[in-house]
Length: 207
Image 1 (cartoon, rainbow, N blue to C red):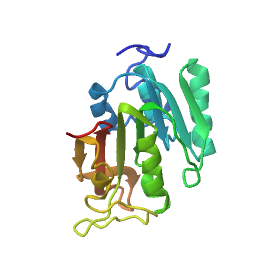
Image 2: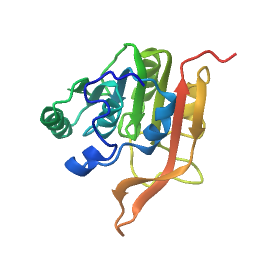
Image 3: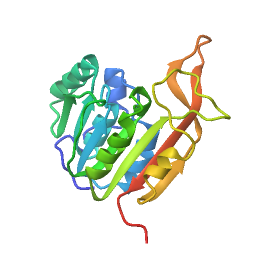
């Protein structure tokens, strides 16, 4: 990958988790990295920046949006302390925000279930429109299915096949509805388990 940032190559993948008590970058982002070429990336619902920092350290110029001021303040402290370039975080209410652009990667991991149901169709439409040709979308979000009802009262959950249908005209490199675990724990101390829709898709015409 070409280096797009002065911070590219400076940090081990667990550097920020160890130093700043962040969770590690999402495993699906790590798995997707070999498909990606460094460029502009957008992290929708970036939280404290674990995925942004990972992408930035691999040469991406990254923009991140979140509606939690404390999370963004923590991320900005890391950016300032480490003197990072090519990384920008902004306060955004995803239930209200419309956008476009030209990004090589637009991602949203474990975020959509916190949004209002009416937000999801136009959010995905904006994600797709803001993706450059040959660029990628990465989405991971909670599901509610007959065999595995969602144990938490999220505003939104995907039904089986719903997320993949949005991307029926893209090249889907990965799609599954596997069981997974949240970092959040139940009353017994066990991590909460549910189904997640996971998608990595490329903006190309399927012949």
